Length: 169
Image (cartoon, rainbow, N blue to C red; front, side, top):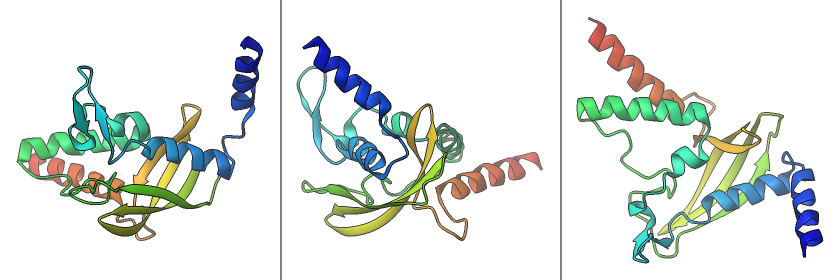
C-alpha cells in the first residue's frame, strides 16, 4: 500500500503541468464544485453562492485577485457594484444542471495559457479563461479575456484609476 501511494505521488510529481491533459484536469478540478451544492461543517446543505469557500482567492492568480480585491474595496466605498453576474457560472443565478466542460486548451507557454469552456447554465455559453502558471500550478488570470483589452483586469484597473483620479482633485 505504501509503495502504491509513493508511485502515485511520483507520477503526479513527474506529470508535465504544461501538458494539455494536465491543464484540462486542473480546470475540471477548479470548476467541479461550482454550481453544485455542498455541505457546511454542521452538515447543512449550502449552495455554491452561499458557500464560505472563496474560489477567487483559491483559484485565481495573485495579480487577478489583488486587482479584484482593490476594485471591490473601491466599489464598497462608492456603493457601486463590481459584478452584476457571477463570473464562475456565467450568469446571475445558477441552474441545478449547471456544468462546465473544457473545449480547447491553446497558446500554452511557460507562464500562460488560454482555455475555451462550454458552460451550461440555463443555456449553453462558450467562454474563454486566461491562465497563469504561478506557485507551481495553473490559476485563472482573467475571465473572458479579449484582444481589445476590455477584460476583467482592464475593468478593475479602470475602476481603480477612475477612483484615484477623481479623489486626487
